[in-house]
Image (cartoon, rainbow, N blue to C red; front, side, top):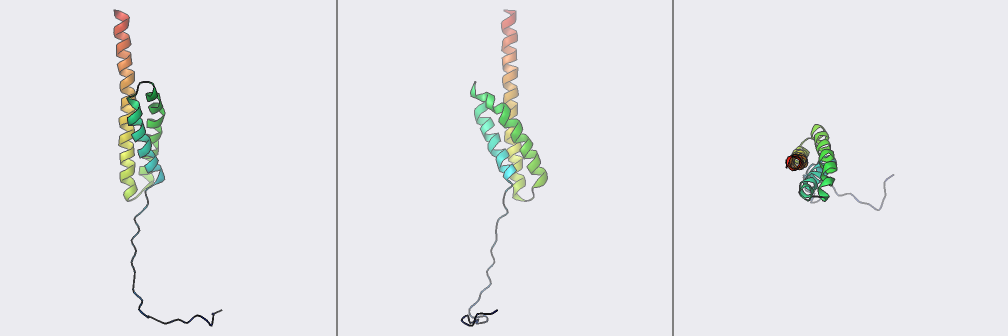
Length: 109
């Protein structure tokens, strides 16, 4: 099944081309990082910060899952997602502590 109109010239100016493709990051790792960054950004806004209660734990879970699955550059993104989500979750817990302290001080006065 060769086409008679095609002529093959062996090694006529052929060069070897080596292409390096960077490994793709895990989608879960990237999602974890994005959710962690959004959690950090929203936790400090009083009413909007309630969204961080959803974003931070989901980002933390996705980051842990991505860390267990990924190899190479995906691990760094997963670790960054875990760190950002943890900071967002600590901010949420900080708000609860702060509101609890304010409420306990207000009751005794």
